[in-house]
Image (cartoon, rainbow, N blue to C red; front, side, top):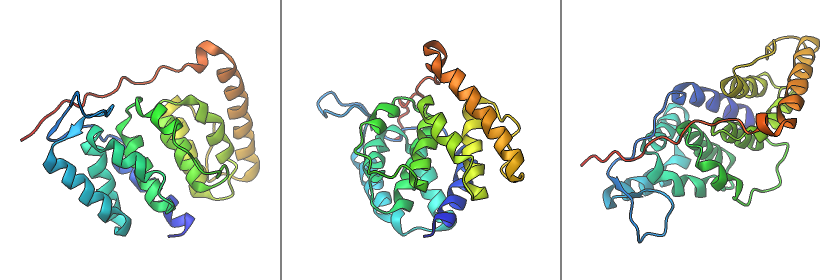
Length: 219
């Protein structure tokens, strides 16, 4: 799958999952599991494993439906999704990131930060990671996405401004379809705002949304 097709797919994913909520079907927390996350029931565990095997071979809307399913399962699927984030196939890793970002569960930030990310600072997947972490409340990702506003591809610029707007409720006049000069003026405003925002320790610690409850249990 080309980088352009991946970007188009995840633009649609963001729109579809923007209001996705975290639910944990047939799950329970076990004191002896050693896991930080809710444990799925045996039946749900099997569903998660089956869906993880199926996801790499899905395409288009079927892929989006798979991501939506993982996002709706929420916490019991986190270990599986965190492992999939390191999949060498960029589209699979991107799908896992999209599902995790859609949960808006800020507890995931530390787990994502601790993953042994490959050196891919300028790749589309690196921007997808930045978008995911920002959606989860990690404002250290803002400068990475501001840099993405200068990308030569309109879709990449659109995804970056969408993530920034969602987190900060600011756009500073940036339009991904505008001409180069207009975009550059807006990017400089973003850079100035970012410098001021993140240089203040109090402002840099942006309040993130409270973790969503994952205590629902359905038979």
